[in-house]
Length: 282
Length: 162
Image (cartoon, rainbow over all chains, first blue to last red; front, side, top):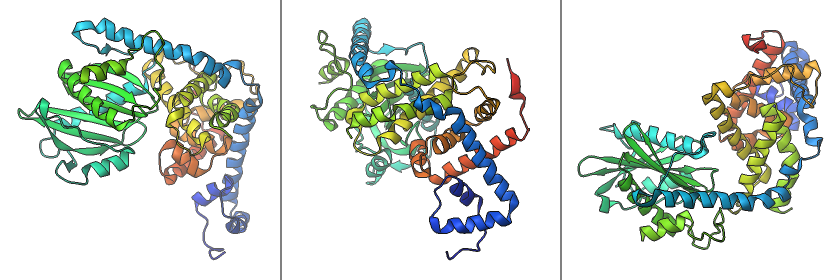
């Protein structure tokens, strides 16, 4: 109790109300409150708020859980959902046909996390490709680029070799991301065209490739194994598709082939989206 | 306990948290259902840690997406109906706190509810929200100041929009 008489901060009052205060400081706070009626009133008000919130919603936890929220029900129906999702992905590929295999547009309902994600990526792309002097934070030649971004993003990143597309890695930068830090890699072609790759964690387990045009930029996105990827560049679908496939191949190396697919393919249509992509990519 | 048993055990609390976020039983249970579906789908991605915090994280993120999509479709946003029947507790005090919570910024509301309703520690809330503990504390502080102001009578114009 070294600081028995030190003034009590507002933070400490919150900590006290929420029961996180170290026991040896509690007595000091109580003494303080006895002598500072304004603080005592605040503490009382906060406690009353907490009580009111618990009185309002606490009983929900005692209600019987509806059947649709039981794991038994969800696992029973999940298989069919997975089938529908995989079948939809396959259908999109088939419909795409010769003109391309990219599913256009997303569901008409609420924007998925990956849509929000793609918008972030396009925003970053638009902002940073315009930068002449500082398009990146860390140059490709600097050894710490990949370790640094890998650490912040939370997975071992590698910057793919895109020389077959006449693209050279300039470097990368760290961005806030939607849920977690995001890495942005920037590439530049001989003619000065810039392409970015955006990577971050996502709760969206696996989604097929989707193409989106925003302004004059194109963005191809997908998610896999807890990470989302967005390739942005000039609106040139075949080219971005080629780059994405190249990236996807490298992703395949990183993820063991034995890893169970997040979405099980239905028994009749074995050619799930990703198998198609890797076959085309090879 | 196994992974699935941990999830199963958390469902009642997830329903409570979701109800306090959406203030409406049906959307709340939709949110819980989405959370559970995602949790099961991502089972192989879960490498230890606290299942409960992880579920709160998913639910919090899904709710943020939900609010964003509501914000983009203002015609579909139902302004809370004061007279809507609600099984949770019709007393006036409950309504007041409900309105006070509704006026908070999402991150502040989430922080406060996770602490006082769900009993998470500041550290756990920081993980759920992906911010430092200091940020959680300032969110809590602002939430409490605003609720107090509301309950003390400084009620903003949102009082009765029908």
